Image (cartoon, rainbow, N blue to C red):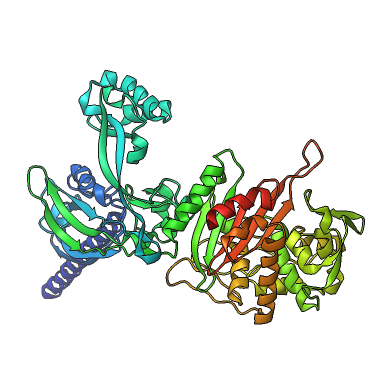
Amino acid sequence: MRRALGALALTVLVVTSTTACGDDEAGAKAAAADLAKTLQKHTLKGVRLTDAGAAKQFGTQVADLESYPVEVRADSVRTDGDAATARLSWEWQVGGHEWSYRTTAALTKVDDEWRVAWKPTALAPDLAAAERIDVKRTLPGRADILGAGDRPVVTERRVYRFGLDKARLPAADVPGSAQRIAAAVGVDSERFVKEAQGAGPKAFVEAIVLRPEDSHGVEGFGAIPGALILPDRLPLAPTRDFGAGLLGTVGPATAEVVEKSDGRVQGGDEVGLSGLQARYDEQLAGTPDVEVRAVGEGTAARTLATWPGTAGQPLRLTLDLDLQKKAERILTAAGDEKSPASAIVAIRPSTGDVLAAANGPGNGGQDIADYGHAAPGSTFKIVSSLALLRAGLKPDDVVDCPATVDVNGKRFKNYSDYPSSRLGRIAYRTAIANSCNTAVIGQRDRLKDGDLADAAAALGLGVDHDLGFPAYFGQVPPPAGETEKAADLIGQGKVLASPLAMATVAASVAAGHVVVPHLIDGIAPTASPEKPLTATEAKQLRGLMRAVVTEGSGRFLAGLGDVGAKTGTAEYGDPRPDGSLPTHVWMIATRGDLAVAVYVETGESGSQTAGPLLKSFLS
């Protein structure tokens, strides 16, 4: 009986001991799992620690890793009485790279509760208490944007950074110097003073970055206490306004850019903020060398992981630097920032290469050249003429050109300085040469639904393409009625185009087939219109455009060689005090292997306002 009782007691003891061991292991595993889950949040907050101060130390050591996601797993836990060891697997995502390693964390059972005895070596192997982990990113130089012949369009150019060096003056003098610096360089005084006061005691607070040619106008800057000019180099176009609306800008990454980059971009990186610079930022920027380091006071940094970067690749464009500069000089000479918007676009018909896409100073930074939306006026008569030629009209057929024509109660007239000698019965060629609105409208019954849109498509208008940058090819929607049909024929109604689109029309006429503009190397869409332009049609259209120069509204171009052209004026907006409407003015032209479109948002007429700009460009 005693032997039976002894066996029973032993059995109870073994079971109790086994249960206790099982509970200890489960508790340790749960504590390790909680630790791993919390570490993924870059913190030890909420973890039961043997030393509460370890949480603060950990926060300091991982502060520079805050923006990098990490996955931590407790792969295994071994217990030995009131002690346990958890094996941790770490997988960091650092700038597109994976940093993986293993560590161990010690756990101790205190008052029946498992606590983590945290040490820096649980964060990274051999990490000392006085060290922290940081990530050093070394960005490669930004690649150039190149033009025709691989001539640099955007490349590193010399600049000067104007600002305040707080280390060079007492704190009490900072507001006064900041105010004087802001006034000297023309930036907002209140904002700059606030930035200067908020910066560190030895900080250089930048006010503005200027090109060498712009820095000469800053007088007396050196006499301001604490004022400092630092030389630097930045990726810039040849001039401040060169291709600005198209090329875009480069600057410090905004919070929005960083957030959308999926870790590729970090705060402080120089990135493309607009235009081609933004769209092709990954290509131009390349990737940085990345080094994860253990850094301590007074000791050399230790490399924990490293990955080589890749150099950025140039973006090649078809822009001809000389033609682009010439176009921009012409537009700048014709107006200022308060002037109407304007643009010049030039295309090589044989290849579709965009040689110039210039925006005037009145465009407010918008790329009107490529993406403007405006009624093309009588330049659209080239499209209307193709539709009418297909409907049986011949260039030498005689048509009526009255002073006015009425369509369902809407009175259409010719432009104000239309020559009276060209009214009445005239050849269609003469009507186009002098831009007779009423003659073209009078032929509207020849056209069926869709004829005008088909003709436009054959000349590259009204059909969108992805050119690798924002581009608008216009619209030729079905007219709502007879009046709108009449207006469409003279480039008003609901017909719209951009300067790029109208240059495309001219290029298609010159080439004898539909041209799709091409700006970016490797991006060259093609078009297959349902009713393509024929050689005979192209020859007839070239003849009509040549007549504009030899006998019509473009006679001022006669001395520039074998030029074909078409002027355009389109009413828009609200009436002026005298009852007249403001007008968009256009002119398109071809000469040899060059097609050009000139646009001014508001002017007198195509020949008077756009014409001189076109003549200067072709001269």
